[in-house]
Length: 239
Picture 1 (cartoon, rainbow, N blue to C red):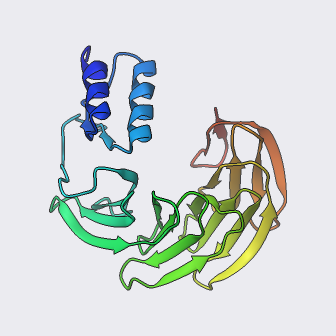
Picture 2: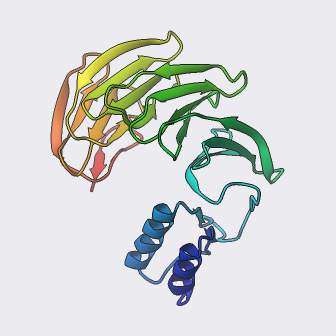
């Protein structure tokens, strides 16, 4: 453990993806520094949550991965990359099983998988948002004035929240219609509650808001860097 931080930082600075056994570092400060360095350089940092061993190494993916997400079945990963592609990686086969070309005005690609595993939500830095059907390749474009900051799928996968610099859009994905457009200011992240009834918007610059999806009303919380609903909806944790 004593060498994890020094060797890990050297690997990341050399442009390498990094795998570490747990504990990943001697202190939480060192762990956060490794995560920050991996994000800054577009590297993948993997720590096995249970055993600490490497499960799969995907060799034929771009060095600059901008986002990564699990498919709901736990058998596939979806990776967005700076080369304007989205790769579907199979854990059992240990290889790429699908690839999608995207055309965004920014270099990197942020990808979110719908809870039913049928669709992807794609966006870059302050671009429109694209919804893509994984099986058919069909696309739908959501025009976002000011550009997309963040997106969040509803728990049932039938809706999506799209956050821009000034607006929170709530879309019915199956019907292809915008159901609500709510005013926001200087928030950067959006999160849908586990029961599907609320959407949270927050950032370190402005007060957080908890929006009622049905009525469009909201209540405010102090400025936070991160926020999470408890699974039973009794609590909200914030930092």
